[in-house]
Structures are given as structure tokens and as C-alpha cells.
Image (tube, rainbow over all chains, first blue to last red; front, side):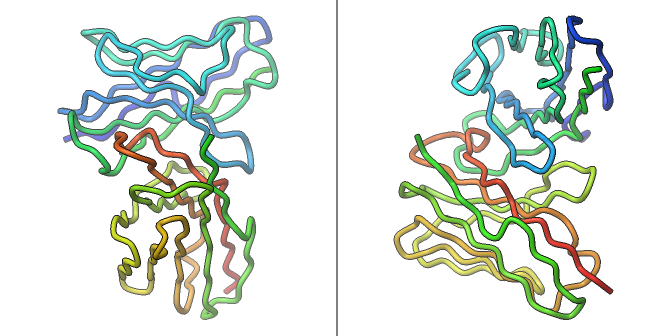
Length: 115
Length: 113
């Protein structure tokens, strides 16, 4: 049973370009969460998705950021017109369907660098 | 909104010394989880505490959940170099799913051999 898979592991983008981060949850998990971690800081919740639904996007910036979790394929976090302040590690986590209060399994993250 | 504070932010110890990190929530939690993140790595689940006053042990690690379910601590006895990393607490409020946790900013532990 593969863990949470994120790709790419490292992504370099120039200011103004788009960044697409992908996350495939663990098999059997239908809840996906995205977190952002700035250097020397903790994990900040961005968005919580289930298949084809955004459940909670209260932590996501209103502009330039979007997320989806289609019926088929991985969850995508999309950042348009990236700026230097978007440089961070983006972690995806997943948890099983209908299980409350259990651990979240994290992927290895995508480290985005905006130059 | 809910806030989770962790102290200290950094802790440097000599190998063999003990280490404690504290986590405090502004609101009562339904449960609390602890994660460890090695340098350059990703958060890895350590344990979950649910009951008021609960104490759990994993070898040299002792986890406590306060009576009011608003604070928690992680204590490591006789640290080793393998304990190096950042320890995060993550608080769950109410009847929410695991991933919708509020993470503290972590305590980064360095161990001098």
C-alpha cells in the first residue's frame, strides 16, 4: 500500500509562472488536505477536499490559488502567477473515509522555489 | 479562530539530557496528535491523545493530555541524536476529520553528541 504520493518533489518557477502540485492519496483514502510550510514555521492548513468537492478552503488565499480533487486522478493545487512569497514546502495529507480523529498521513511534500 | 501555541521554539540539549515541549490551545480540544518532522522530511504521526488526563508512553517518549483538554506535553528521556527534528502538536476541535487540525509552530530539537 503506497503512501501519499506527491510530485514533483522540487519545483522551480519564475515569477509570474504557474505552479501545479499533484497529490495522490493513500489507497482507500478519500479525504485530502493541503498544508503550506514556510521555512522555520509550522504547517498552515490551506484546503480540505473530498472527491469532486471542496469541503473547506478557509486557509487558502482568495486569489491565485485553487485546488481540485477530480473523480479520477490526483488532487491538484494550482498557484497562478507565482510570487517569491509563494516559496514554501507544500504538503498533502490524506485520511480514510468517514474516520474521525485518526492520523493524517503526509506525503513527502513539494518544495516550491520562485526565482 | 483556534490557536495552538508551542513552546519552546528551539531546544538544544546534550545527548542524554531530557527534553520537553509544551502545547497549549486557546480552546478545548477533542483530541491532540503529535508529529515529528526530520530536517528536510515530512511530518510523521507519533501518537494521538483523546481522554482528559491521558498519558501514553512510547519507549523514551511520554505524552500527556491535560485535564481540561487544552494543553499537552511531550517528554523525551535521555535524548539521542536520532531524536533530532521538529515536533509538532496538532489539535482537533469538535467533530472534525483528522486532517483539519490546527498545528502548532513546532519545537525544533537539536542534540549534541
